[in-house]
Length: 300
Image (cartoon, rainbow, N blue to C red; front, top):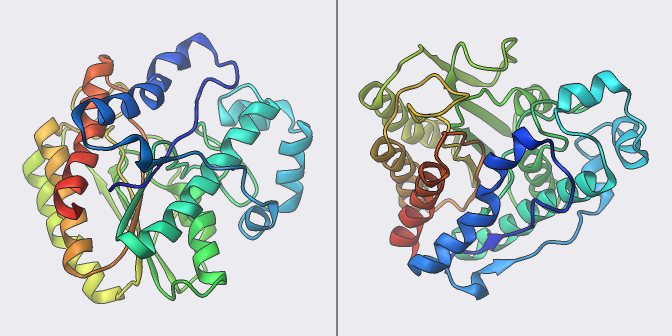
């Protein structure tokens, strides 16, 4: 069983240029079902998160502007989507999907969010197509409800988790670890607890050596009792918005390293999908499906 939060992306209008990569949110569940990696009963559709959980991470003034659709034009441009109540509702559902996934992972060992990985959302603003930081909200939920005492966030998207770093910059019970393209967006990086910025063109061998070294090292060092994994597949050499040169097989091996260590150390893990912008949608779907294939093999 792979508990998976699922919610439709097409509940709000998107600019034409954004619709192609967003297709993955609809196609990935179909692929998981087609391959027998997941069953219909594995999927759950979250309701919008209770605002009290959102206010524990994001500033009330910012959230109220989102809810009332009163963000100024500059703030909306930084987000990159036209602001609508449907978009805000979707982000609230994504946040709840990650919260619920955490609760399930505490029982089953692993859970997924088909969307999520909105790591460019800060305490007081959104950017980079992120309004609310789903994993930061869920991590805070776990800590506030005494469901975890030390959390490790493993962010392996090609873009630094700048919003996550800012949110937890003064939180000793959350360790933020980001491996990303050094010259990729965001061009002004925040400071995670551990940042590894990779040179343009970094390929499988160097990339996987870093992941293989630091994931078990940080688990041993920080002794987390819950892990969040952001499994962006924009590390692929084909990705339009990334500048690393990893292969599909290398990306899959990365997932194997993360999940096998979570399983070995018996630490529950919640996985949000993150980015993926290769020109061919089949490449994106295959790469994301690999993440679920790996988990299904390990946790079945």
